[in-house]
Length: 69
Image (cartoon, rainbow, N blue to C red; front, side, top):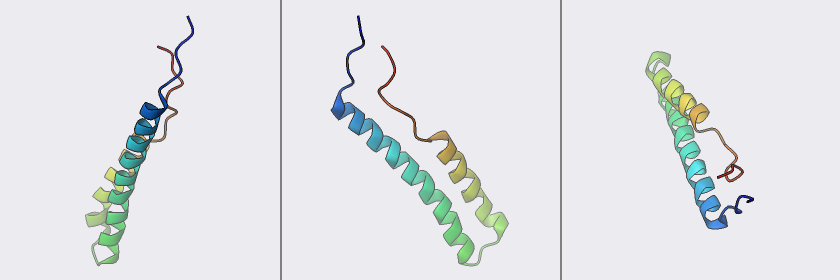
């Protein structure tokens, strides 16, 4: 029996969640950049870069809906 096609509404929701997670991760990195531009040292801004970059790698775009059930 072939797998049923994925529900378009659920696919859109999954892609929206994925985009939201990536946007929040990027915001952490950009906040670190703002902190750095406002006069903080690299040691103070580095945690933002590390955490934001790690989250971006963890939440990288994945293809949704192509798996089998």
